[in-house]
Image (cartoon, rainbow, N blue to C red; front, side, top):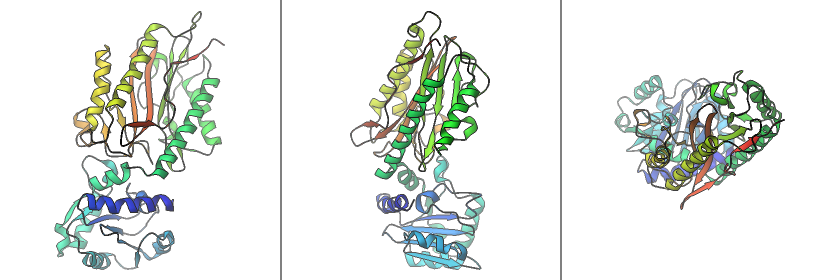
Length: 397
């Protein structure tokens, strides 16, 4: 944990200078009940009383926390000064800001990026009260650009951890392919995965009751539904959406199988064509995924490919950031719809890890959906695992 936080703190100094912001202030309380997503980047601990973390563009790092939390933060050895208090934080915060004398103070509020919106409305009002009758109350700006960059630009350590989570998930998919048989229900397939994930001592990239998503044939709910009692049948597709959390970092992959019907030795043309089109759309999006490109343009490349091949457009984004969580904030590779306003226009950056995902429906067979995890480099894209390039089959047992 300490190494990751040290990397992020170093990264933040450069980011503050890049965006011409003097101080980034993260203001929190009772974080086990109401965590600020930014806190795991810069401290990785829980704090009880009102606590302030001030990161300055000149590299200075100050923290003001309740007395009972001082030792834990000092033991990290990453802050120049850890100030403890007993009766109240106000004067300590004012004094720290006076010493730093920032002209701009970025706070964790955002209308579009949930990962940058950790300051609750009540705590924001408390912060304004602390700063009342000081010049600092009029110097507050949103930290959304800073948090988007700090969270989105993965360090080498972060990339390595996501890559390991992806490798583990690929192994689980291989085990699923050996385990499943026609007649098994979604719930039985999910239980097998749960047992394996638990045996390995891993976490889940999203809540366990809905992870993995298991879609058997055309009668399964499509989306984020929990596994049910729909059985896997011959002539149908099997789809799994699985993400594990390993060493604090996540994977998020989708894989496809076709269950061979009696007399079949290969998937029927309509199933194979659907796979080929989904794979082709992902490759089209990959081709557009470059540093500096706004997210909506990447989505458009994949969306146009789907439409050109006669399928309805998918009603979701083509990709999202991946890291400490499955949906890791900020930039979305999505269309210019209301629900993606403000985040689909953000530019892709080197160091971002994105999912690439979409689906089509194969009538009477089920859905066809793939998802890959990729790293954006200075020149293009690097897959963090082995992409699925062929539709896998489940034979007649």
